[in-house]
Structure formats: C-alpha cells, structure tokens
Image (cartoon, rainbow, N blue to C red; front, top):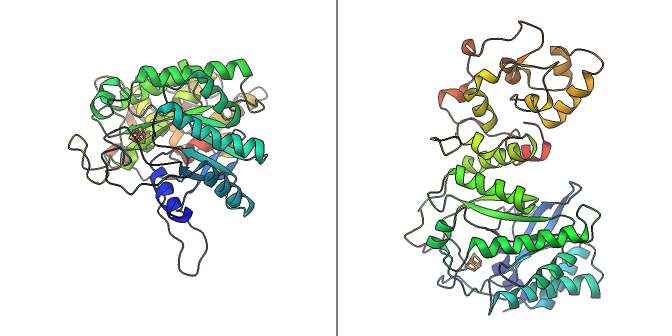
Length: 409
Ligand code: SF4
C-alpha cells in the first residue's frame, strides 16, 4: 500500500479523537477551489493561544483491543494500514516545508504491547526532534500502563501528551472496554504530572509545555453529565490536567448492540464545554452545575444561567461592592470584564453606561445586578427570554468551545 492510501485510512481513523478543534470535519475541496478539511489536517491551540494546523494521524489502526465504541477495535472489519516511523517523519517534514502544517498529532492503535506501541510513537518524535531538529508542535498519545521511563521520554519530546480516560466510570469501562482500567490510566497521568513538576511546568518548560489532556466520550453509556463533570473536575484538581475534551459518541458501522444507535444531541457536548469552563475559571463546582435529582445539564439554556435561575436568592449582585467570586456568577459577566469592573471601581462607581462600554450584554445581566440601591428589577417580574420556555436556544459564538476561547460567559 502506498503512503497516500495509508494517509487516507489513518487520517480518517484519527478523526474520532477530538483533542483538535476541527476533528470530524468532512469538508472536501470544492471543484476548482482551495482548502480541504480532510486528509488529516486539524487545528489545535498552543500554550500561548496560537491556533496551529496539525497533521493528525494514527501510526496504525491495527489494535489488539476490542473497545466496543471504537472503529479500530480488533473485531471491526475496517480497512487497516500501518505507517513506518520514517513514513510519519517524512510526511510531517514534507507537509511542514510546504506550509500545510505547523505540527503533528500522533496517536495509534495498540500493536503487540502497549510498551512497544509507545516506543514507536516516541521513535517518531525522537527522530523529528534530534535528527531533523524539528521545532514544530508535537502532540503524542500516551498509552496507559506503560513504564514511567517511556512516559517521561515522551514528555521530553512532545508539547502535549494525552492519555484518554474515555468513559467517566469504571463500570462504563467494564461494559464497553474491559481491557482498560481507570487505575492504570490515572497512574499514567500521575506519572506524567509528577515528571512535569520535577522538570518545572509552564510555557517555557522543555517538558510538555502544553501539558497533558484527555478525552471523555459522551453518550456511549447512560452515564449522566454529573458523572462526566465530576470525573473531569477530579482530573483537573488531582491530576493537573490542562484540558478535558468531550467527544459526543458517533455511531460506528457494525456497532455492538450495547451501544446506542444514535449520537447524543450536539448541544449536550456544548453544554459540557460550557460547564467545564465554569469549573475552571468561574469557581463553580461540578455538583453546583448538576445538582440532584437533575443529573444532566439543561439543554435549553447555558449552565451559568441555569444556576442563576436556581439560586435567585443570590441576586441581585451589587456591581460596585460585590466580591470577584460573586461577580463571576452573574450571567453575561465574563472573566475579563469582571477584572475590568474591579479595576474601574477603584476610581469611580459604575453605571449602565460603563457596562455598555465594556460590551457586557446588558439585557442578559440586568435582571441579576444592582447598580444603585433599589434599582434592581425583581427576578420574579422578569420577562423570561425564549430559552426559558423550553426552546433550545440557538448556538452562537457565545457557546463553547468558541466561548471557551474568548473567556466571556
Ligand atoms: S485501545 Fe484505542 S484504538 Fe484500540 S480499540 Fe480501544 S480505543 Fe480503539
């Protein structure tokens, strides 16, 4: 099989990993036009916020495991291919020199053993970095359960490493991916975290400057958003992950009867990204966003607004006196704007015009704030916008992950 045919198979097989923003794009080059969303070019974000194009491929889609949700599982009859280390290195350099890409995202099915597979991934990164002095971005997949030495070597060569946790609970893994265990996956994450702490973390570190990430599949099991967000929260707090990606389950050909026949609504993935952003930057706990008995996020409104409506006693928040933590809970107040409000109010009291100048969506925030004593409108008399009448609000730039990058919520 020639390299082009392998590329077609192994780029397509990599699209299910959502650690790149444009994963799953099926856009083809129009007749006579330019630009192609397929064939393995995707985008990701560097630690300094730059968007970079990556060659996103698997080293091979052969795999000895049989995870039911995966198109590459051993029992699948999907076409198979395997790159050599040199083929991946040459493709990366070739695409890089032609300015198609700024880096490589390399994952793999498990061949022979997890250790052997990890060694092959490392061999690609080592050759690029040492023999070809490649300075571009490299994202490697970390294979759970391999030795600490291999993970440390991978971390010294790559910008980002991701060990995928896949499903929120061990019960889910036992059902759909019995060869995997959270204990082994989390041990690998801990080893990467500890090595990063020894080497010094952050953008200037030579060890994984973009940190480690993971992926959680949404909708392959009946697991609730509460379980997913609790797991994500544990990973951020306990294991120092930089990002958790949420990937809506997509039905695969000849799927096992244990799997749902339909993908979950796309808006569920968006709500999870919004909730994730609220946990990381707005001080919300997973349990506040998905309180019992409602274990799932509302699809018809964003989780910050949903929290505000459940906690009307918390409002109105006085823009001129409230602490930062309270301001961050006001719908429509983003992290950047809260910072600006705190800075402006050192000099004078804010009024509606000040908020307008900050481009805060006044109509969204107004029912939840007080600018002058007695000026707050009572929430009970609030004319509720359309999203409260049960209609799913239209997704816009306000929604994650676009929102997650702008930091305004
Ligand atoms: S180990 Fe990875 S590639 Fe192999 S079947 Fe499971 S999810 Fe798919």
